[in-house]
Length: 255
Length: 269
Image 1 (tube, helix red, strand yellow):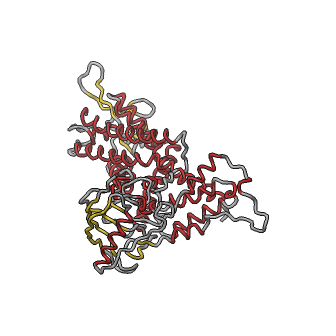
Image 2 (tube, helix red, strand yellow):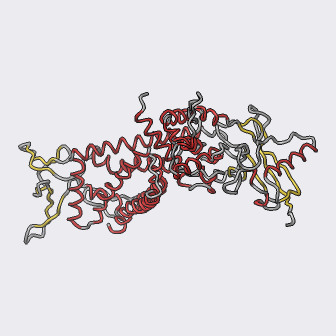
Image 3 (cartoon, chains in turn purple, cyan):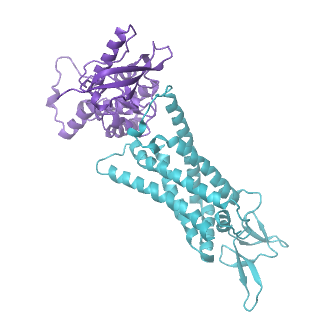
């Protein structure tokens, strides 16, 4: 299959550092292979910028195979671009037309401040995880084999689907309210569905939701944008499950 | 938000069922509507329900404004290019705007009817019937009372809204019905003044604005109905498709039925 190349115009957010005022800058990039990924296209642009002795564009990336959750980018008005169920590293340039103008922006949320150019600080997600996204296990030498506990296949599948969340933040970026409900609900669900997670279920959901609010994410108004843009297709079922868990815990908690 | 929203949905059903009586024509329809109005303002259970409704509307609105304010703050810098239509419905993203329009509508709606009926400085006219005695050409105006009997309008005075008094002896002789039917007909009616009420020269404008308000309500419910269930955690592969279908049906049928009343009154009265 002969590879096709396209010429594109790019409008990319440039911002020197967290405190600087950023702006959209225009770039022209020729001979982009339609087989290249979006990140490879940015590599090509950076090479061009370096050759022109300009500052290359900072963007997040790591595994480049859709499982690490590092790449982000709001491309042409959508998180991870126009394709469904893919991260930006899995988005290919064949999705764009020759001569097209492509807008590239960082995730926009108060809880995700821009560090530089297209790189945002997503450590708010880490702090939510630390607030309850774990199970406490006795490691005194008599640790029970997790597989020894019988778990219904249905529950195991649902927990696994929730655990597929890579924490990229596309849900926050897509949400009109910059709400983190899909992420937090996936992290709550993957534990709440399994017997190991039941022990700390109450404190987990209360602490994680409280931390989510403290980090400055918006409120969920059930637009469903998050689930559409999620590269791992995390379902809105998880948000309903977290709402149930939260109501149950909030009504019955002592504090 | 979800609880008050769903409660207000049940209020809409009750309010609609009551108002649909305006379709009933003639003296019998007028009487039924005014009797219904009297019941609604004199029953203790309805009183509790109405205060619950006022509080729900206030809570729903204030909570909505707070949420919208927080949500606005959660994204201080907007996207240069955003395409939200690719992932969500316009109504779902515009609940605060739609809700604000509905709140303004509720205020004008209550000023037009609720305030006039309850607190207006000029007392509400009571339900009257024009009859002529057998063999006589001359029409006589009578008050309909809550016992079903009639009292002449001449020589009697009205106190405390609905109480009919004989002035010389200062004795209550009957209890009348506020003529809410004529108030409504005069407000939306084509160009006819209903008894005791001046014709509304802006009736057409009122009908159009009411229809637009109901369209706004329709969009609000289109998202709001099923969204309330999701917020409460009610989501299940068996029931959610039904709830969503019910919500869409509710969002279309209820506001349309509401809007049909002023349109009907404008075209026929």
